[in-house]
Amino acid sequence: MTEFKKIPKVICLFGMPGAGKGTVGILLSEKLNYYYFETSKILEEAFLNQKNKVYVIEGKKYSLSNEKKLWLEGKLCSPPFVTFLVKEKIKQLKKEGKNLILSGSPRTIFEAERILPLIEKLYGKEKILVLFLKITEKETLFRNSHRRICELLRHPILYLKDNKNLKYCPLDGSRLVKRKGLDDPKTIKKRIEEFYEKTFPLLDFFKKRKIKIVEIDACPPPVKVFESVLKALLI
Image (cartoon, rainbow, N blue to C red; front, side, top):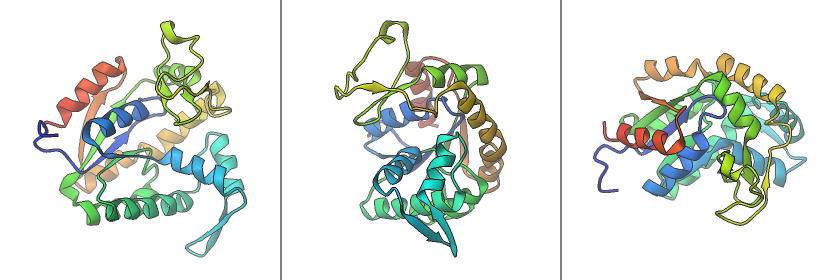
């Protein structure tokens, strides 16, 4: 990490589904030894491990079964439910001395109004950086409809002609699978609509709070995108 002079302690990856947040997040976490905080993975773990649990948040009940239904339809889960899970995890990680790479959080103004002040308090506003991974709708449709992840550690596997018939993850050996329901074209289009309606307005929110934002062209191959990300961290 000695090559980085102004490295932030919290890096927020922002962009449409398929923009490469997962790939960039994993590469950065390995490069910087930061904790890769993937909101979707936290939700998946909650849905798998506590099927019938009901959370009471700000006086209202949120059942995991209902939240999972929203998630599978490509809709955003209830902001209070997501916010609760994220805040608890962030506080835990800070106690452990972890710096963070956030992928997929916050996703709504509601979440940002509650999560960002906590991050600013714990890490300092000047130590937060937003990387906006910009991608076209055409590219995100292609990437998501062809996306596969490994069954064990959930690594995203880049789709290439040379590996389109690959059946097992080269990193951990587990089977490669598609996220059933989440990555079919109809659901992807819904996720894009949700992004523009509920997530894209966060850019103005970040600007108003004077959080630094750097735009990255995320359409090129991952190696080129990652080069651009590393250059951004030297600004």
